[in-house]
Length: 143
Image (cartoon, rainbow, N blue to C red; front, side, top):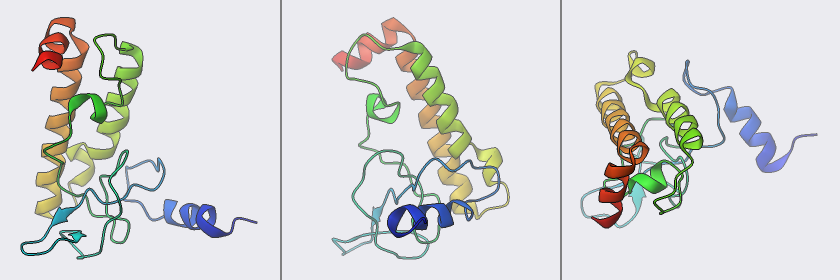
């Protein structure tokens, strides 16, 4: 009944780390290895796919990947690049992201993933605080 991509997604959903709710297949937020043009996972060396959405995890080994330093707060929090922001949607997105990357969920993982989790969590906190307050949101927009 569930063949193809949908079936694969459903089968993978049972493999996510404890404490993480499955929110769709989250691909690699990939890193380029020195001297390589191909994006690869830091943990398994697997090739990552194109970056889009909530791609914090490697699709092959499910290791948390490093945050993308070029990603802006609006795209991280899934908001339009505008002064007008739906604060209830922003709060929901903040909670959703913290359920994915909060350090409490990575206590039994490698030190690298713990470090990436702290960086992701800090980034999500900063983005939320900045976009929640109108003054800081406006300053962020013009910067």
